Amino acid sequence: MIPKDTIIALATPSGAGAIAVIRLSGREAISLVSKLFRSVSNKDLKKVNTHTIHLGYIMAGDTTIDKVLVSVFKGPNSYTGENVVEISCHGSLYIQQQIIQVFIRQGCRMANAGEFTLRAFLNGKMDLSQAEAVADLISSENEASHKIAMQQMRGGFSNEIKLLREELLNFASLIELELDFSEEDVEFADREEFEGLLSRIESVLKGLVDSFAMGNVIKSGIPIAIVGEPNVGKSTLLNALLKEERAIVSEIAGTTRDSIEDEITIGGIGFRFIDTAGIRETSDKVERIGIERTYEKMEKAEVVLFLISAMDVLDHEASFYNELKKIRTKYPSKPLIALINKTDLLPTDKLLNLKNKLNELLSDKDKMEYQLLSAKTGLGIEELKSKLLNDVNAGVLRNNETIVTNSRHYDALLKALEEIKKVQHGLQEGLSGDLLAIDIRQALYHFGEITGEITNDDLLGNIFANFCIGK
Image 1 (cartoon, one colour):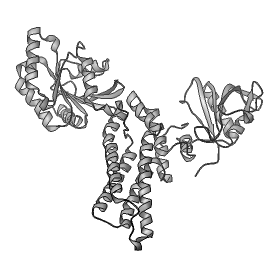
Image 2 (cartoon, rainbow, N blue to C red):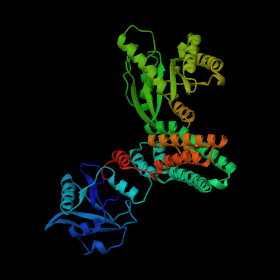
Image 3 (tube, rainbow, N blue to C red):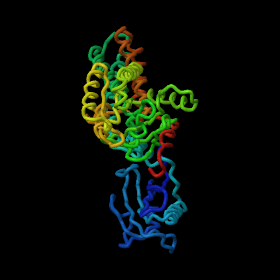
């Protein structure tokens, strides 16, 4: 499966810039570049040490294309495990294309999407889950997603899976050995010890499966729904959080007819705020569609922010509490924060009265918090951001626990967990070794799918097609 030809691609973003990097990889990469490279110090690239950089010119016959720096990495001590050369040239589009074309005429082939990383996988430089983490690292947009991708690229997740697979494989070998001595009725695998291992594997797999919900939202931004009646300041709040005029603000109730989304980073974690249409009884068909979408956004949100004006709480405390209870009943496990807006309009005595009412209404047992703020002046916005960080379960990040973000890994983990449960059930029922071995093999198969010990061309094609060309 390991290709023998030499590939080339632009490794920096396409377009004009200060510099561009063109990457080659393959058995003949160094010798091909040496044919077209004229060193200022007359060095022969074929004889230089690995991991060295050399100044010179890329030539097309007697014509100089550009003055460049050439970095040489000799296999197997390179990213792909093959000979790799990176040419740093001036970032002119014309120069980039001329260099690539002159090497194609020398026998290079344009790399496919992700082919450098594919070769790194095929040459044993990284396993499949680490290779997939490379793509996640490139697309990471905040500290949290970057941290998860780095942990997986360093092998944190795959090492955990490999250890479990290795232990399970040892027991599988003993059970398979028992089959060879079935007529003598002997047990090489200690059943009690095996049950302990299965319980531990089950616990680890459940933890990894459960982490996917958090990992998925961290990867794409944690969705936060801003809901409430019309004209309570939802759009003003969104603008205050984003520090820009993203949503239209008007005194006319029902201005927001559809949801508006934008993302900011708080404490290294991406939060996707969704300004929804105001919830009220209306005969306007368009507004009613917007309200229906508000409930859909609440369903998908990780946290719900219920916004209400301070005067409405004082004047209609019963209806305010009932509306909160309705949301809490509908979404019992979602963090729910009541945002009491427009507090800047209240005199000191009424503000104190408001706090007393809120402390009476909202108890810990209802799992409902509140935050006083003024979206217009920015009062309480930073406190709200801190509260969101605390309410979202980011502890796994701080504790450096493994978080699953890849849906392919999640699917394989679920299947492995199902097979482990079958083995556990088989042990309890006293099933014979040959039947236990079938389910153990299936569990091992799904572990191998994650790290790439078990692959096929279609799987690899689907994974690396999502990479950028040049990586």
